[in-house]
Image 1: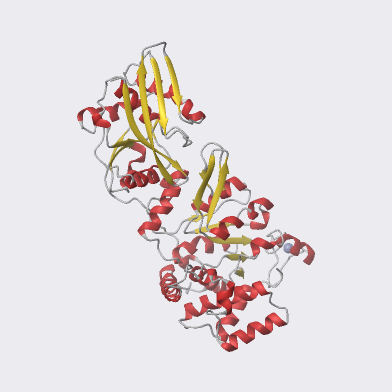
Image 2: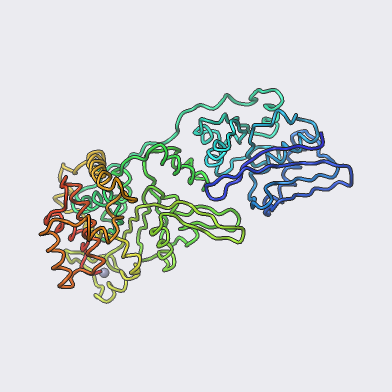
Length: 507
Ligand SMILES: [Zn+2]
C-alpha cells in the first residue's frame, strides 16, 4: 500500500484535537514534504523519523514522500508526532497493515536510535481521546503510569519503535509486562503539628482555608512563615477525583507529574522564587505554551516568599488570574487558556533589614523605608488580599512547651464542616466561597447581625476602614462565623475579622 492514515491528538492548552496523518509514497525523485501548519520541531521530525526507522532495521523509502496533517488550520507543535508519522510510513511501505492501526492513537517522540521518549501531556491527551470514542493507544514506556490513570483506554506502552511495531504485527507486548493500575501519588509528611506556637497565624490560615481568603504573612526571617504556608494544603479539603485529574492534567502538560504524583488528593503547593519571570509565573514559551506557576497551583496554593522583592511586573501579572480564575496566553498561532484558580499566600519581611517586630528589637529602618518597602506589594494586588497576619518568632515558653497545638487533620475537619455550611448557604449562587461574595450581596442577603453592622459602619464613618476594606471584613466575618458554627456573623465575629484584616497597621 502506498497510502496510509494514522491518528494522533494535539493539545491546545488542555483541550485535545484529533489529527489525521496521511502518508503517500509516490514514484519520483526522493523527497519529503510535510503539509499542514507544522512548527519547527515538527519539520525537524523528518530527520529523527528517518534515523529512527533506519536504526530500527527498516528501510527508508527512497521515493517521493508526502506527509499531510489535517485539519490543516490547526497549529501542530512539538515532537509528539514522530511516532505516528513513523507508523504511517511503515503502513505505506507495507511493513504493517492499515487495519492493525485503525482505532488506535499514537503518541511519542523518537530518539535517533529508535527509542521512544517521554512526552508531556499524555494524561490530557488520553482524556481527550476518550471523548472522541477512542479505546486504544500506543504511548512511550516512560508515560505508562500516567496513561494507566485513564482506565477507559487500553494503553500499550513501548520503549522503542520496534517494540510498537512488534505489538501491531503480533499483538504481543514485547519488552515488559502490562501496566499495573496502582495510583502512584505520594502522601505528604507535612503536618501543622510541626509548627511551634503561632496561635494567631494558625488561626488566620484556618480562616483563609475556610473562605478562600488570600493571605499575607509578615514577619522577620526564620519565624516560620514558609513552614506555615507549606502546611495550608494539609488543612484544605482533599481534592475530588475529578479535580485531582484536572490538576494532574496541567502538571502533565508541564512535564512535572512525576514530582507531585498523579491523582494526589492533596491540593498542590507551588512556590516560585521571587526572582521568577512573568512567563514562568503565568505561562508562556514561544514553542509550546507551557502552564505557569499560577496554573500549576490550580486548586491549591501559590506561595511567594519575600514577595516585595519580586520584579514589579511579576506581581501585577497575577491580577488577571486572581480575577478570572484562569489565564490566557496569546500567540501569533492562537491563544491558549489554562485554569488558574488558586489561593494566594504571600510572605514578606516586615522591613528592609528584616528585624522589625512588635517586640521592637534591633531594627534600624525608618518608617519611610518600611513603608516604601511594603508598598512594593502594589495596591491593586494588596486589594485582593483579605488577611494580613504578623508572624512572630515563637517565645521561649512556646519552644519549651510540650503542647504544640492541633494537628492538620483536626483543623481540616473544621474547615470541611465550615465549607459545608457556606456551600449550603450559596447553594443557588454561582460562587462557593465567602471570599467571592459580590459587594451588592454583602449589602443585601449577606449582612451581619445588627450590632456587627453598626460597628463596621462606625469604623467606615471614622475612616478607619475604606469601602473596600468594609467588604473584606464582612466576608471574613462570614468565614469566622462558619468556623464558630454561627448562622450569621455576630459582633464578636466582626471584631475578629477586623483584626485579621488589619493585622499590621503599617500597610
Ligand atoms: Zn528594619
